[in-house]
Image (cartoon, rainbow over all chains, first blue to last red; front, side):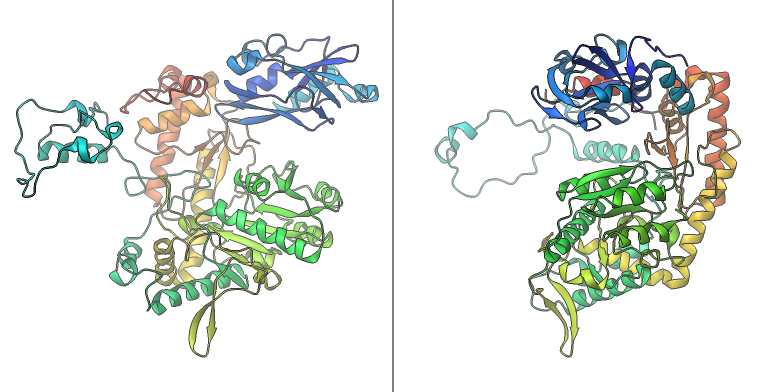
Length: 130
Length: 478
């Protein structure tokens, strides 16, 4: 099975991707993750303004066969969520890195950025899980 | 099995049917005067169908039913064993089925409840039992509330529960309902609890304990079970045993001896009472002496004047169900235990393990088993490496075509495309061989003719349902 791995993004071991733009991080789940979950039927996202710590639960992604968590890749405040996913959760399947983005975080602690993993390491992780 | 389903409302006939309702022999009142306008209606959609057609309609519908009385039901983690009919006959004796807990004389029923508590105590090693919980998850909640109350009583603040990712989904759900937060432990490569991670999690200080299913949902008995309970106890925690998978342990080992403090049992699984279709179930919990005062009240105690019901001395978590729980289910389980005796129960455990391993060995020739070692009551295969990208759902739907109920699918989550198979001890070798034959046939179809799997089922009243559309755009009313 081949998956998409955009090289300009950072990744987590729990299969989130992070796109950093100054102090704002856009977050979603990877192509591999959406593939594992299968057809996504519901996405629950946090309220705007919530302050959450790294690795805490930011939302839930429900597919026909499982429920997965969206974990915070970095500590920070939720400044925007993808409202479209409420009506069209299938965007996570069809476009996980673009229209299927989930949350935008205003990050607090830039040191945590170094703890995210590179695309090469993420590819290795996926390979080991397959 | 295949046939059109006509609703009874579509079966009406035009001619007027014999009216069975006798002539009115009292004065006829005007409905408008005695019933509020808002509740009056002009149409009553009762189908105009003769008695014989009604009988045929419902008998035909009942033929579409599938149960363990029809064929093998290998639904993993559900222990769909045969329910001996003698237990049914006993429960239906008027002395059991016609009693009410508020009638004056109830000694017989009370004695039965007392006796089965003792039996369950002997089977699990626990000191005190309550029979109130109405199902497994209800027992879990009661057990966790006991844990909570115990620590409150000791004046220690405990807010977290450790749950391995190979546990039943109800474990974290019950812990959350009882007000705890969850620390999930990832299983190691052997499908067991990693001791170093557990040690680390327990050192947080505010951990009330662990909830563990052993054997777990992979059908694996954790070989370090005593070390696990020791680590939890050393760090001031309690150990909760999810007894949903007790079947293969019967007579062989006891949760108490593994180091557990609280256990729930599913009488409707291990002790052969009917289940599925929504119950009723029964999920008694047993506890060690230290926790007995916290059990739901009332409890039954033995005195010089016979058995009496006693409210506890104030430490109890209170009632969690009216009266004594699902009495009818408890009577069936009591009959089952008496019918089998200690020797019979031991044989249940052994044959449950033998049957599961027999299937495991035969199926591994074609299917992938991510954790392939001697299992207990069940094992899990994966759709990884299936030819032509055939998925677990395709396999399960095709199994239905062959007139067998499908195993549990997509659970546990730690295995990709899981197919969880639990044959139970009541299936004969012929029945197990038939299941293997069908599974092998399906594998060949996956290679030679994948389309037939992808579009299955073909022989059922309905075709493949669109689960995605149903979940995304549910139609909840007309």
